[in-house]
Amino acid sequence: TQLLEQSPQFLSIQEGENLTVYCNSSSVFSSLQWYRQEPGEGPVLLVTVVTGGEVKKLKRLTFQFGDARKDSSLHITAAQPGDTGLYLCAGAGSGGGADGLTFGKGTHLIIQP
Amino acid sequence: NAGVTQTPKFRILKIGQSMTLQCAQDMNHNYMYWYRQDPGMGLKLIYYSVGAGITDKGEVPNGYNVSRSTTEDFPLRLELAAPSQTSVYFCASRLGLAASYEQYFGPGTRLTVT
Image (cartoon, rainbow over the protein chains, first blue to last red):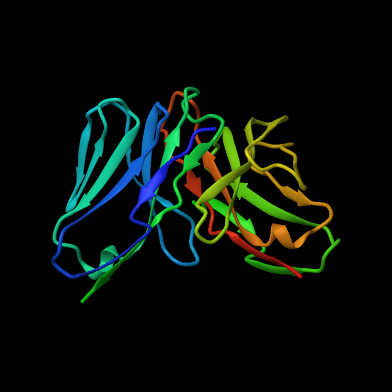
């Protein structure tokens, strides 16, 4: 069974600060996705990383896939209250995710004005 | 496009009752999934389907059944509800293996079994 460990589980910071969320595993994933979930809604995809060492940027969010494709990080620069939410990492196995994704437990992020 | 729709939004069941959670997608996606989300536990895969007529078990299938008679619909059946099935259930769909990796999620069904 593949497992994804996310840290931290909870993070509350002031507007304008930077933060990093980590997603680690002992397993290799064919791809890794980051989702954001608002209360009462389903997760929404932010980014997919596929290649080891890949870095993707989405405005103030920077996503990195580890060289060995076992871990990933999400870095937010100058956090805004609108960044508040639950961030989930999810990995696809050797089948490319046809048999579903393995999710981490999530990071609850609160950005205080 | 409506995307992925789920009904009902909320439901309270008594122990031993049965119900069907409905899921439909209008994006002509081949792959569909059912996950459950418990507080602090992330999402766990219950069942999935790679096409009409094809279903397979995920990580936590016990107590559930599914069917996929059409590309659009993927209902989840609970036969004998138990308190351990209290959870938020999400249906998701994906175009196909060679296409985008993205899974599109519905808004969820919050189920309480008492």
